[in-house]
Amino acid sequence: MPDAMTAESIRITGHDADEVEAYLGRPLDRGPCGGIVVIHHMPGYDHATKAMVRDFAAAGYAALCPNLHYREAPGASPADASAAVRTAGGVPDERLVGDVGAAVNHLRSLETSNGKVGVIGHCSGGRQAFLAACSLTLDAAVDCYGAFIISEPPAGRPGAMKPLIGLAPQLSCPLLGLFGAEDTHPSPEETAALSTELHRLGKPHEFHTYEGAGHAFFAVDRPTYRPEAAVAGWQRVFDFVNRHLTT
Picture: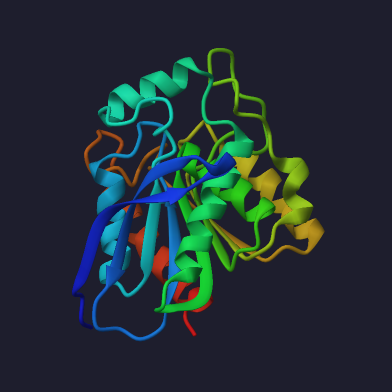
């Protein structure tokens, strides 16, 4: 499969008409393709997240990651911007939906778009992927160990994170969930409860939990990285988006 792609920083008009930075990756020499909004984790708009954008572009998708922390610290390092956002209480849910909605609209406006757009997020981004899928009209969503969909966050967590289970009836698309059996946020009990509720509502979803893996098992630059779970998880991600985002 050809994997030529291009990637660049752009500006999009996000929530409340704010201009925010975003990172766009696109395949070269391809026909109509699906789009994916990549939601970065709480550590920020970093190298690892941009690498995901390029991976999706090389696989034949237009991928766009909005910098959710841009307003608090434009031009700052991901770590500094993340610290500023944590101090401010986290990314407000309403603003997240506005920024992701702007990214979705940008992807659908591309000449190469086939009209289908999904979303993927890890950690806080997993929770936000679920939020986006319940708030916007999407074609697929991937939640990689997103916490606080079912339960309240413990004391000291960003104040913007509230349970989202009440939004489940509004889930607009199939959902893929990838979790670690040793994770505590979300715990296997929480992901099972979410699956039970989605079954009750008749919402299409598939959840997979990996033994020997905890939180952030996809993160290649962290001690939490679990290669077998990550490789299997990425295979499921691409199988899922290929089913739901291709023409």
